[in-house]
Each structure stands twice: as C-alpha cells, then as structure tokens.
Image (cartoon, rainbow, N blue to C red; front, side, top):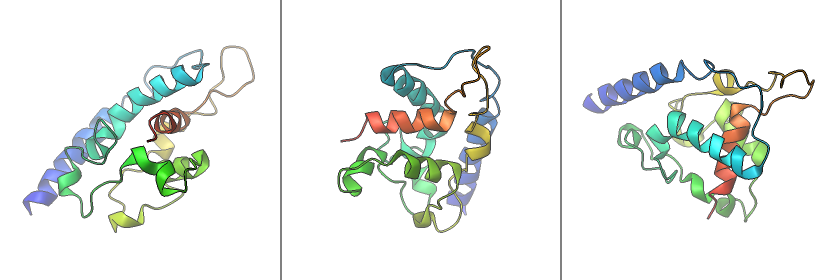
Length: 144
C-alpha cells in the first residue's frame, strides 16, 4: 500500500511539473546534433528521470515503486543488435508502442504533451522538431 501511495505521489509531482512544457515557445529549433541532444537532455531530466534516473540507467527515485525496474535507456542500441531505431524509441515515448514490462500503463504517455512538430519556425513553413524527437536525440547520444 505504501509503494502505491509513494508511486502516486511521485506521479502526481511529475504530472504537475509537466504542465509547464508548452509554456515557452521558441522561434527556432536546435540546429546541430549536439544542441538537439542538449535540449533533449533538459526534457529528459524533467519528464523521464523520475523513473529512468538522471543517468538514464533505470534507477530513478520512483523506480522502486514500479512492478519492474525501468529500462536502462543507455543500452537501447545494445539490446537491438547495435542499432538505435529512433522511430521505435519515439513510439515508446508517445504511447504507440506499449511498455509491456510495466504490466499496466504506469509510464506516463507523453505523446500529446510533447509532440509539438506542428509548430512553425518563424515565418518558414518547416516543422520544428518535436520534444519527443529531442529526447530521442538525447537518448541516441548516450548509447553505450
């Protein structure tokens, strides 16, 4: 019972902090792989580190209250024969692919909250990379 209350309290805190994700809109998107990874790291720390840990190794403060520990996100490519498939990783974040190890949808589905690909950059018609894309770029950059 205490594990459930602890998990719900942490999930509530994460949800409260998530409410501010769309508050500031930038007129430009990160243009280099390094700047995209840095922007993704900031988002990861805000929305994912509670469960996956600041190092993305699956040891966040909420991990003890989950049925199974969160995945070590530093080893996505290793678990996939050395290949990091960005589309698949994005699908886990936005909820198109279910995280079966959780048993129930304990991982917050950030798809609607983080997917801002329709935001235009200044007067251009190009689409800004979404927040999910930035997190994926960060995860790509930390593969072991």
